[in-house]
Length: 85
Image (cartoon, rainbow, N blue to C red; front, side):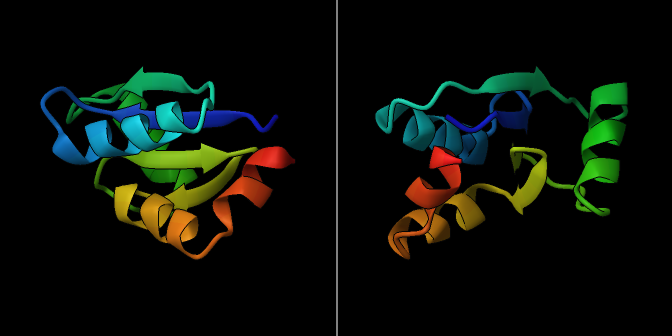
Protein backbone atom coordinates (compact mmCIF):
# COMPACT_ATOMS: atom_id res chain seq x y z
CA UNK A 1 0.00 0.00 0.00
CA UNK A 2 1.10 3.55 -0.72
CA UNK A 3 2.49 5.90 1.89
CA UNK A 4 -0.10 8.62 2.50
CA UNK A 5 0.69 11.81 4.40
CA UNK A 6 -1.76 14.58 5.17
CA UNK A 7 -1.04 17.99 6.69
CA UNK A 8 -4.04 19.29 8.62
CA UNK A 9 -5.26 21.88 11.09
CA UNK A 10 -7.84 21.68 13.86
CA UNK A 11 -11.45 22.49 13.03
CA UNK A 12 -10.85 22.19 9.27
CA UNK A 13 -13.86 20.66 7.50
CA UNK A 14 -11.82 19.96 4.37
CA UNK A 15 -9.24 18.09 6.44
CA UNK A 16 -12.00 16.03 8.04
CA UNK A 17 -13.53 15.24 4.65
CA UNK A 18 -10.19 14.05 3.25
CA UNK A 19 -9.44 11.93 6.32
CA UNK A 20 -12.94 10.43 6.23
CA UNK A 21 -12.56 9.42 2.58
CA UNK A 22 -9.21 7.78 3.25
CA UNK A 23 -10.58 6.03 6.34
CA UNK A 24 -13.63 4.71 4.44
CA UNK A 25 -11.24 3.20 1.93
CA UNK A 26 -9.25 1.58 4.75
CA UNK A 27 -6.14 3.61 3.95
CA UNK A 28 -3.63 4.19 6.73
CA UNK A 29 -2.20 7.70 6.68
CA UNK A 30 0.22 9.81 8.66
CA UNK A 31 -1.34 13.04 9.85
CA UNK A 32 0.78 16.08 10.64
CA UNK A 33 -0.77 19.01 12.48
CA UNK A 34 0.24 22.10 10.51
CA UNK A 35 -1.15 25.24 12.16
CA UNK A 36 -0.42 28.61 10.57
CA UNK A 37 3.18 29.68 11.18
CA UNK A 38 4.43 26.24 12.21
CA UNK A 39 7.39 24.38 10.76
CA UNK A 40 5.01 21.65 9.60
CA UNK A 41 3.01 24.25 7.64
CA UNK A 42 6.20 25.59 6.03
CA UNK A 43 7.15 22.00 5.13
CA UNK A 44 3.73 21.41 3.55
CA UNK A 45 4.00 24.61 1.52
CA UNK A 46 7.48 23.72 0.30
CA UNK A 47 6.60 20.12 -0.53
CA UNK A 48 3.41 21.11 -2.37
CA UNK A 49 5.07 23.67 -4.60
CA UNK A 50 3.71 26.71 -2.79
CA UNK A 51 0.14 25.73 -1.93
CA UNK A 52 -0.81 27.40 1.32
CA UNK A 53 -4.13 25.71 2.11
CA UNK A 54 -4.85 22.61 4.17
CA UNK A 55 -5.14 19.79 3.88
CA UNK A 56 -2.12 19.03 1.74
CA UNK A 57 -2.07 15.37 0.77
CA UNK A 58 0.89 13.36 -0.48
CA UNK A 59 0.82 9.85 -1.87
CA UNK A 60 4.24 8.21 -2.07
CA UNK A 61 5.79 11.66 -1.74
CA UNK A 62 3.81 13.08 -4.67
CA UNK A 63 1.69 16.14 -3.91
CA UNK A 64 -1.86 15.46 -5.03
CA UNK A 65 -3.39 18.62 -3.60
CA UNK A 66 -6.17 19.08 -1.08
CA UNK A 67 -9.53 17.60 -0.23
CA UNK A 68 -11.22 18.63 -3.49
CA UNK A 69 -8.36 17.07 -5.47
CA UNK A 70 -8.60 13.84 -3.48
CA UNK A 71 -12.36 13.63 -4.08
CA UNK A 72 -11.84 14.37 -7.79
CA UNK A 73 -9.37 11.49 -8.05
CA UNK A 74 -11.86 9.20 -6.33
CA UNK A 75 -14.74 10.26 -8.62
CA UNK A 76 -12.56 9.79 -11.70
CA UNK A 77 -11.68 6.28 -10.56
CA UNK A 78 -7.96 7.11 -10.29
CA UNK A 79 -7.43 7.12 -6.53
CA UNK A 80 -7.33 3.35 -6.03
CA UNK A 81 -4.51 2.99 -8.56
CA UNK A 82 -2.46 5.65 -6.75
CA UNK A 83 -3.07 3.96 -3.41
CA UNK A 84 -2.11 0.52 -4.71
CA UNK A 85 1.44 1.54 -5.61
